[in-house]
Image (cartoon, rainbow, N blue to C red; front, side, top):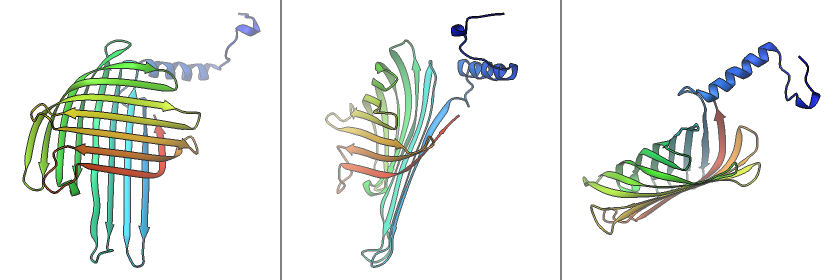
Amino acid sequence: MTAPKDAVQSVRSKDEEAAYEAEVDRLRNPRLVDLWTGTLDLSFANSHGNADTSTFSLSGTANRATTRDKIAVYYTSLFSSSNATGPQITTANAKRGGILYDLNVSKKWFVFGSVDLDSDQFQLLDLRFVPAGGGGYHALKTDRKTLDFSLGVAGDREFFSTGLNRTSAEILLGEDLTHKINGTTSITERLLLFPDVSNTGEYRANFDLSAATAIRKWLSWQLTFSDRYLSNPVAGRKKNDTLFTTGLRLTFAK
């Protein structure tokens, strides 16, 4: 078989061609354990002397995206302690996480289901359990930027240390943005609003923003900001709680 030089795109041995075809088949028909990417963020600060303090934060994400659907798992936690006022006491203890599933029903439209979990010792929140579902629209999707909008309903079940338990129905309004600024730096941002339909006038808001600059293919420096707003906290507690972390980010892919 002969062919013009300009028509030859690649040359492979028999073994190389078999490996290539196996990889193409894996991408076209992925198993559940295939195509996962993720990050792990770690930061730690410690001081000794007139005051002993320590702060530890941990965040992680795992994502599996195909042309048909997407799975996202996420987790963030912050713990801090200090003895500046005498005995060692906890000064911050918050955890946030969840799982999201998107299914594309057309090029632009998708449906989703999610479950979010929150706890915050200093908001006296032992657990917030929020299952949700609805639909969304891919407003923008390029190699460098994606923008999605979503609308749905959610159930909010809250357990507080005071003994107060609350259940309410909510509307979910969401916006998700990813943007690759250049070859090394990218940002991700997510905003969720939860107007309470069981208690008119009350609402919650979740906002997460993260920026990362690659140092190596598997290593980045990250800055992450996370905010949770609750319009009706228990008596004596503030409505707003924020987390800010910075440190190393490890990246994996399968």
